[in-house]
Length: 276
Image (cartoon, rainbow, N blue to C red; front, side, top):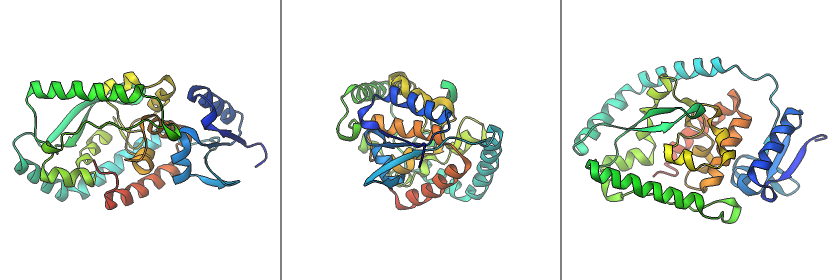
């Protein structure tokens, strides 16, 4: 491990830390991160060394060109849509029968380079009137603003404040949400080039506005149908630690990492972990 750099992430401000990591990577040094915002990821997906768990970030040598990721996404999303067509048809019928309203829920989210796009999901809740919908949006914004402004707790995380009216979730909606089946329409977003199979989770415009400056590195790649947060952080970590997972993915992105995350995602979905 000669030439490797070991950093206690809990002792350094995130922007300063990431600049140091990026400089070390450009110099060809492998970086080991322990504690702070990287602690959960280190425990769940890192390496053990000297009695601690570490996230290991290695310099990229060559790396796959971006167009290869796009070819992979197009082929995989087309095959998935064809293979899952019977399942999708059944879900469409069940959602239509669950309550009045559209089959698909759509909203505007922020993607690569900060560009907005329309994001699709199967509807899992009873629809609201325009006035009620606007009220709920304001409540979500206030809750997210409160969450992002609260001081970090142990491990650098902030508490989660999800604003979900459980009384509005339909019976089939609970199943769809538990096993992430409500997110299958995002294969259309992948096919359209707005998303990738793997990447940071899409965020709402007001969330992006409240991100700290260091977290905007997550917009360097397309958001993903799956990703580090979906596998290792879902339901376990707070606001800043989730962002750190996304940034860590951007720093370490590779075909091999994506394949591992896709396999792990399947296991997480089948177990129904972290269902909302």
